[in-house]
Length: 126
Image (cartoon, rainbow, N blue to C red; front, side, top):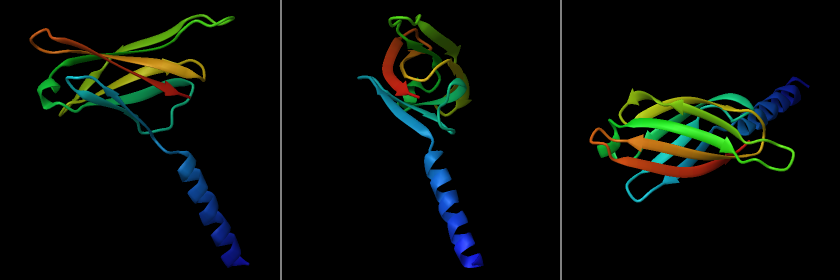
């Protein structure tokens, strides 16, 4: 009986961990790619996103992010913006508020030290 209980608990733990997979998406442009990820599954409310710039020449840039959901019948436009914090080595972190479930558009703004501006787009679903 104890073996069956242990086996059941292991299966339950495995299913729980599989459901808690982290989020990852790639935003692409002709100049660089940015890996957008989260260590926790995305949910409504505050979420911390990590932004990893793949091109080392943009590693010292300034990065901002905007997530938004366009207006739909019976629902207003929603938006959350943040200036990303430089964590070093081309990695940035930003907190955004995803106020409801659905598809959110993501725009990542990169401004280099010499003033070059890039905008990368992707989307996420919660």
